Image (cartoon, rainbow, N blue to C red):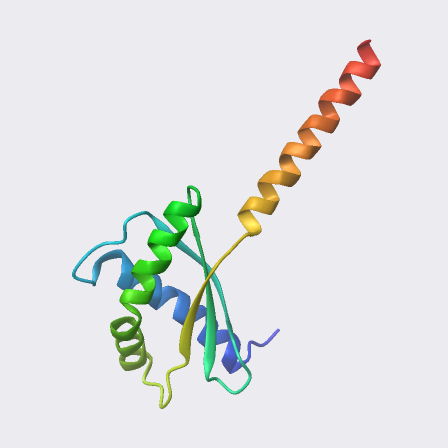
Length: 121
């Protein structure tokens, strides 16, 4: 299976972004940010970067604000490293996948408990 140029760019953007946020900015993020995936538009102008943070809305908003404040320097560093003629505009989106997985796990656990009670009860 071959990867397209867009697939390679999506993967590389995540790697570079994680490296930059982890230790190359003047200040560090308020909470631990995990970059989960990116989606680059077909015209390579925009990239949605999905991130996750442990915590609630306050932590998510704080990290989103941190990423927006540093958007310019992050874009510049990534563009220089990847030697792209046009660096896509990065748009940061909270990844709700982790929340969905947790919710499904809780539902399955509850169903299992109810099934066990019916068998013993």
